[in-house]
Image (cartoon, rainbow, N blue to C red; front, side, top):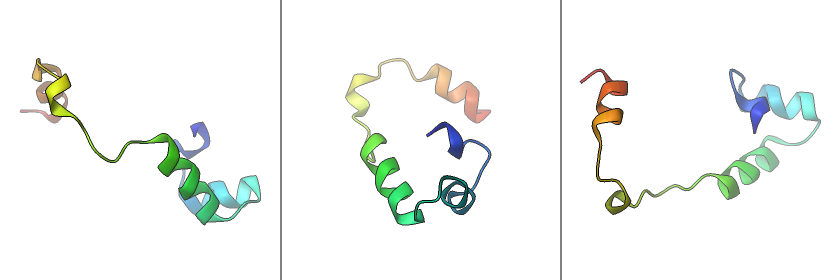
Length: 52
């Protein structure tokens, strides 16, 4: 996962000698694609990051 910081999926797949599909499957297993917003009561920190 750290290899993906400031890199493209294709760059990482070449460097690690695995297919880009393999990298995507690994990322998909590690990162949730849905957020349960009921867990968050204070959204002020997110607003400051968004520049709002």
